[in-house]
Length: 82
Image (cartoon, rainbow, N blue to C red; front, side):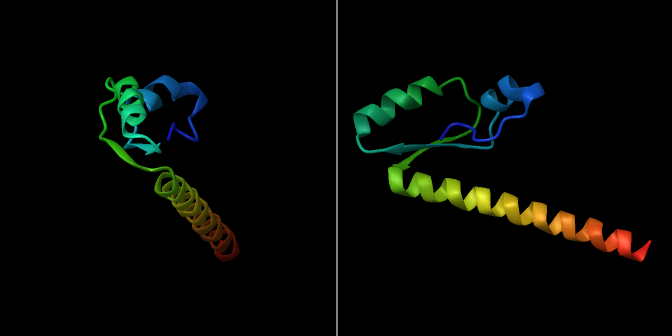
């Protein structure tokens, strides 16, 4: 799973310092080759099935969306109070 959302000003740093990296695999040999590409990355590199990797991605996107919604609601409430 490559970074889905990289900030324009820090894309290279985001690539080399992700919180984690997940490799979805159908084949162990190919997964090891892909993992070698990420050998310079400081975070852990996990290997799992393609399905689990995709579910992880969708879960993380949903969590980010929920966080943004909560922040938006707090800002809206702050404007109502002020």
